[in-house]
Image 1 (cartoon, rainbow, N blue to C red):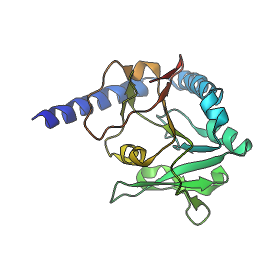
Image 2 (image 1 turned 60 degrees about the horizontal axis):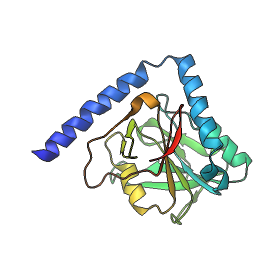
Image 3 (image 1 turned 135 degrees about the horizontal axis):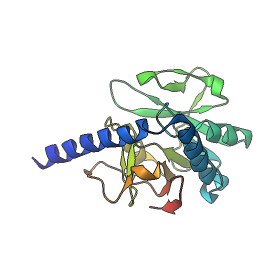
Length: 193
């Protein structure tokens, strides 16, 4: 019964956060995304990292294109995820440009394995983590497939979540497998979670 309650609470919050995102007008989204990107690009954790693990943003997510371009320009290793449809596992591949991507699982741009290099050392780097919402302690609410929670269980570097401030709440329902991020970036603040 308790697990069903958590699952239902998460589904309700997913709908709530998706509605908030869908109500953001395009011009406002561009402004909010730029503020979040700028905070991240100026963060010591980003500036000092030589390896950046980042998601490729979908339309409703905080745009990561500027971050990827900046990291490539500054000769950082940029690794992006490729998701398995059957096993809910996710591998990261080093890309050399945005031309190394094509539509993959769930219609999201993914690395083309023949052009990219599989990253096997997950002991360091900065992982930029997406989320529909976060809580102030750094727990995230994703889309419910568990890709990032499984990946973060193996990742040994710094984790940083990107989120609109109106999608940050005091406490999210969570279970044993939910992973915390270390830093949270919104349009209003950069803080340790």
